[in-house]
Amino acid sequence: MARGRLHTTTVRFDADTWMEIVAESDRLGIAHAEHIRGAVLRLIGGAGEHDRLLRLEAQCDRLAEETQQIARSIVRIVRSLKAARGLDLTT
Image (tube, rainbow, N blue to C red; front, side, top):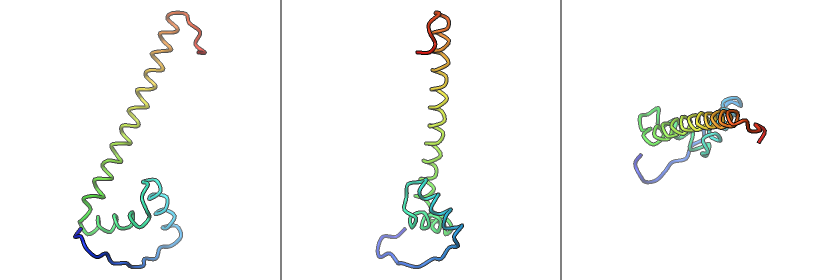
């Protein structure tokens, strides 16, 4: 996007669409206007930064899932070790 003066406009959305915009922008942790601006830029082909954010978000989701899988594996291993040693499994 070219640097310089930004222009302001008004866009109207029905209640359901606005609720979706609010939910998604809140989930991403960005302002509603930033979310709408990103969607417009993507439509006109200038979505480099928006696409980068989406890729980063997908990477974070994958890492979170992998971290959860590792944590579950660690719990299973610890339980197996305790059971093999005849230890109390409640601690």
